Amino acid sequence: MVTGPWLLVILVAGIAAIVLLTGKFKVHPFITLLLVAVGMCFAAGMPLLTYTEDGKTVEGIATTITAGFGATMTSIGIVILFGTIIGAILEKSGAAVKMADSVVKVVGKKYPALAMSIVGYIVSIPVFCDSGFVILNPFKRALARKTGASAVMMSVALATGLYATHVMVPPTPGPIAAAANLGLSDQLLWVIIVGMIVSVPSILIGYVWAKKVASKFKCADDVSEENAEDYEALLQKFGKLPSGFVSFMPIVLPILLMAIGSVVSMAKWGGTLANWCMFLGTPVIALFCGFLSSLVLLPQWNKETLNDWVADALKSGGNIIIITAAGGALGRVLANTGIGAYLGNLLATNLSIGILVPFIVSAAIKTAQGSSTVALTVTSAIMFPLLGSLGLNSLFAQVLTVMAIGAGSMTVSHANDSYFWVITEFSGMEVKDSYRSWTLATLVQGIGTMVVIWVLSLFA
Image 1 (cartoon, rainbow, N blue to C red):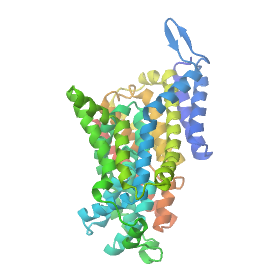
Image 2 (cartoon, rainbow, N blue to C red):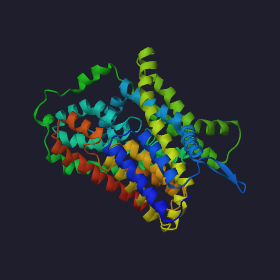
Image 3 (tube, one colour):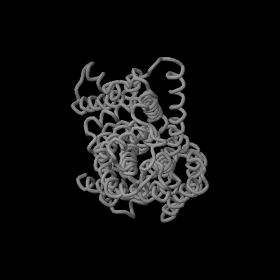
Image 4 (cartoon, rainbow, N blue to C red):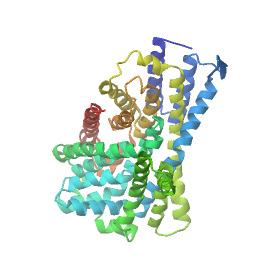
């Protein structure tokens, strides 16, 4: 096996290969991750077959790849699928629009941009940010017309609000995948809690940028209402919207169950009731209960809702699962090659320094290839074997690592990001204005969020 500085060369070459293959040559992340994983195995001199020496098992290339892939698939696969199904039901049933309407009623129409930021914050917890923007775009237009607010300001406020929770709060698949790759599958509640806390300053950064900078730009929605859709027309698409209580339940119920389960577990209570609380609080069962509660939102129980809606969600979730599992394979390769141990001799175990590394790697991957979800999954797979070397050993530090990777995965959104084009096209913005209002917003939001995370790390 290779030792010494060459291990660091292999790590840097592997990251560069991932960026190059996914960013320039548009190779699917699943293929990219497996190619890089196998390539790093050979480069590090890993044995072809598993063998035992002095009572210790040394994994070969095939065993390392399959074990890493399988372990990740086992720990997080079902959770990701339930998360995507819940998101699809909220989107198609009109529950997402109802949640948006509820927030506007609380915040008031005098603060339309703030309302959009908060709406994005809530809706993107279970729904992908690009889907959330498409769903809420007619609502945003109607509110902008009623209040006379800048359409670009409203778009950027909504988009940054959606972005914050999309990259940092489960059950959105990206953060779930990152948590799984970092060994936090059983600690999703803490990832959710910290993610929701960190997302607050993140959306405020986006809101301030929208108010102070994005409001200076113009777009088609500011000067024409030909393509605009008022709120009444939006409601007609869904018919009667579900109640606010039922709409929020698929999000609130899993969080509540996991919270109760965690409290019971930490208190070390025993008995049948305690066992049931801990059972219902496990992430897979909590998300299953959230899915069951979302069935109330179905307008009808028929083939379209119970089959087609779920099938669409499974297609999306399945793609994320295989990428995440491939990331798990890469993570095991990094662990078995000894890269983490070597890096530990080079880096001081200082959390305030170490927490910057996942942000930088994630931002590089995001900027190069465009997908936040890919940046989350790939970076978390790379970081897991390096946690000890970077001084990120504690539970809180590991949760903050998920946040740092999430902050990096929003830095920056530009032409290779589908979300960039969703915002640009649906808002009627010129591309140059989208770069100046939206792309720069993601740069400021990502760096600002990382500053918040770094400050939190000082107390770990």
